[in-house]
Amino acid sequence: MSDIIAYKIGNEIIDTQSIDARADKASATPIYFDNSDDALEVIRHSCAHLMAEAITALYPDAKFFVGPAIEDGFYYDFRASKENGEKLGEADLDAIEKKMKALAEAKNDIVKSVFSKAEVADKFKDDDLKQEVLKRIPDGEVSIYSQGEFCDICRGPHVPNSKFLRFFKLTRVAGAYLGGDESREMLTRIYGTAYADKESLKEHIRIIEEAKKRDHRKLGSEMRLFTFDEQVGAGLPIWLPAGARLRAKLEKALFKTHRKRRYEPVRGPELLKADAWKTSGHYANYKENMYFTRIDDVEYGIKPMNCVGHIKVYASEIRSYRDLPLKFFEYGMVHRHEKSGVLHGLFRVREFTQDDAHIFCTPAQIKENVIEILGFVDSIMKTFGFSYEMEISTKPAKAIGDDEVWEVATNALKQALDENGFSYGIDEGGGAFYGPKIDIKITDALKRKWQCGTVQVDFNLPERFEISYIDENNEKKRPVMLHRAILGSFERFVGILLEHTAGELPFFIAPTQVAIVPIGEAHQEYAKELASLLSELEIDSEIYNKNETLNKRIRTAEKAKVPLIIVLGDNEVANRKVALRDRTSRSQSELSVDEFLNFTKDKLNEVHF
Image 1 (cartoon, rainbow, N blue to C red):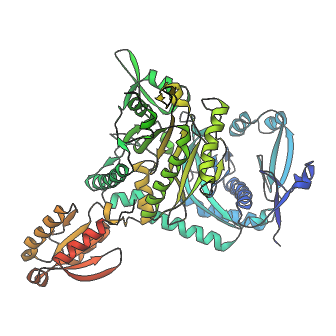
Image 2 (image 1 turned 60 degrees about the vertical axis):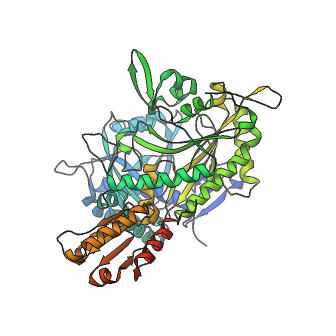
Image 3 (image 1 turned 90 degrees about the horizontal axis):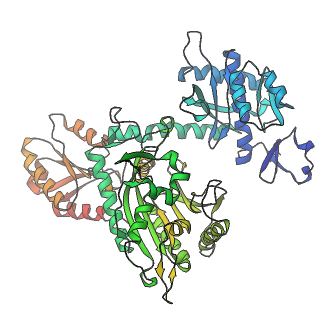
């Protein structure tokens, strides 16, 4: 049996040296040294301290802020400089890892000590970062964990001995503002990961290397899809022609299926008076994420969400219960203030477009509409080859509305999932400020999870804006508002899809679907004819006719991830054929023009949502 490295009581993890002090220790469940989620949390948190111990040994003047375990590893924020005054960088990771291995081999016990907050403050009186940590800790007892010559303020839990910390890898160096505050000092942050065995670590490293090759920023540049420009501003993507074609095709496919599902297209303004945001609750609960301006001495807010515009569409006329459900959708551009330190390619931007929809229905219609949305989600995710899971997020600390209303809304989501046999997790306190939600978390080809779509039940905004419908008794009743996005945002979804497919996008949304490569000048006219025929089918093609070798032109088309490549020479012109290379099936064939056009039409219809 594996060693016990910690215990669990309820949702709390307790290390081995703390368990005897617990009055409820009889109910404790052991956590063994393995790759379970609980064990990895303890291992990774302990490994963060091992890294800090190694950094201290190499750079004695180093000072440390916080070093938590995170979803796939750990990090530590600290201040340290080399002899030449430079901050630590990627080139220093090997030396730190080597020192960590030596310290782990020393098999030092990790010892917990408990002091008063005042005693700890005195112990670290010359360490400004420790004083910052103490500001975030309530008065009372404070624990310190020591291993070898290193100690740090920490709640724990940790493994009992450094011998459990053998399989780790430091992955990257980044900058991090002290406490996440952009006005404060920029600290150095080193990320790493750790496992209980060598094989799991090796697989994780393989995935990291593969992720670097699939980085959507790298692919976006190679495929000329999008760019960013400092003169324009951080977090504001610029879509190049190929990227705009990709976007337009995705939007067109989704528009068609929305209409089939009886959604009505609408469009709200991007700038609304601040009074509207005060009514909605965004001003009080979301203001720090919004941009504001003044026009004619009146405050306006740029929309971070599309909800208010859709409420006003609903309120534009009297509604009957016979009209419900009403489904409005919009490719709504929104703006949100994101700190510069968290901006990351298309994954985290300040301007993005949501595939947003709002359904106004009666309370009795909640379940059927939630199920319809989840069916919509399923068809889209299957088309793109994503598996997914669901999580219900409940009332957050910062919320509007009565507890009773939240309970009704949350139960409605649970019942919709339970009655239809869906499995789901619970994220306590993770809901939107106006209502609980179902989050759709997709898994990509590298087994990474991404939160994309969402379904939210909202009783609060209809109440705040006093919208109504006339029921069968000719009385005014309040509708329920379901907020719904499936991709989340086009920007983020495109980034995820690029990494999921390594740029090998489905034919129906590929920016250039066919690369036409004429071997010589005599084959140019035939190339132009085929391009024209493809254009009539709304298929984008590009003629690769630069003054380069045939092989180089084919390689250029392959690097651009064009799904179909046709090569045209004397035989193809004389017999009105094409030599086809299909990148998806990795096959080559010879087809007549009609056969080729029918083949592309079939490829174009490979949309199952």
